[in-house]
Amino acid sequence: MTKGILLKFKFLSLNNIRKLVLVNLIVMIPVFIFIYTAVQLVPMVIRYIDSLNITVLEVSPEYERLALIVVSKKPGDNLWNNVQAYLLDRKSFNSIRKHIFLSAFSENSVNILQQKSLAFGEIRYINKPVTLMGNTGEKVITFNIENVREGNIEILFYNTRASPDRWLVIFYSILLAVSFFLISGSLGGISDYTQRVVFHETRGFGYLLESIRRNFVRSVIISCIISVVLGAVAANIYFYIFIMSTDISVIIAAINFWMLIFFLFILLWVYPLSVLSKGESIWKVIKKSLFVSFDNFEFTLNVLLILFIMGVCSLFTLSLLPGFAGGFSFLNTALKEISSRYSKSEVTARYI
Image (cartoon, rainbow, N blue to C red; front, side, top):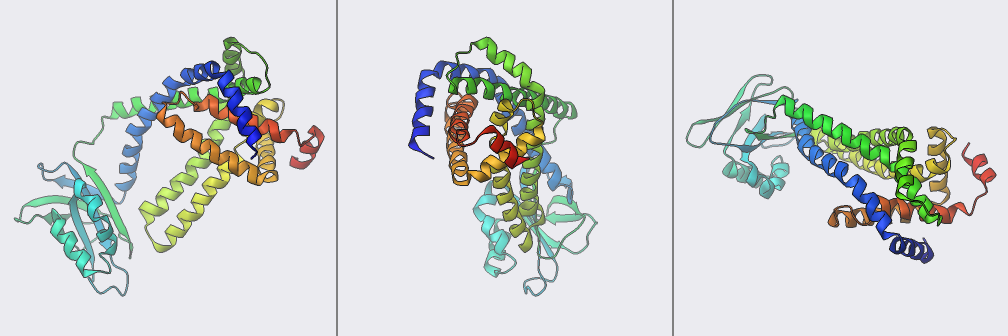
């Protein structure tokens, strides 16, 4: 990454700042809708996944936000010969999190968990209701657990007021889908418009709308491919860290994390290359992006890092600056720099 590219990007951004802000304003509403609905739906999905193994049947009405922890010992641990369950107030969960993971090895951690718990007890039978009693003998919670793996820790966050209305979930899901298609369908057009800025071509606002319309379907397909790939890897990371919770799962989660970086790396140039290669299939565009990334390994890593920094900065400006437009403008500036190294025939011969 040369200073010249950063200086060119700075010059272009300052001279076209109104255009970039206008582009960001266009996508701001669907972005906010997407973020809001995702914040509402993602916790619901996580609670549903967490509840696949543990089902809460009854909770004392005086409690609202709880954390139910089930700890299963490994063969050879000398604290228990069975499984222990703890019920904690959600507010106190983070302060004693480490003792949950140390409880299979440290008697001191066991004592701290028991002192801080609203209720605790042993689980002697699987697939049968388990009731935990409070310090004064009152029934606090009744739950059912379907399976307990040796050496595992199951954590279920429960909120008595978190049972969403079915129609509200459907409404949020529709909003999430619509906002996703509006955002993803606009990315190709934004990349095309900012590419014209980078190439010093004067284009009006009408060109942006026409470019979004012209590239909408292709952009949605590319976005869906990227979302499925990255979403699957991210789901794997969550599954192996929070659901499996075994020694080997941490290693698998680490491998998946580097896979996530790998896919971000190879898909980095897809949108700008899609604009430059309109007559080619999406699969060929992805292959070309793969070629450009690995043929310019260090350069691409630097671009990815700078885009990450720009993304963080966008959070503080509500995506006005640099936002989507600034990100694509920088990406097209970088691509313009490295594309001058290749002839069209050379690139075609290498990625086919």
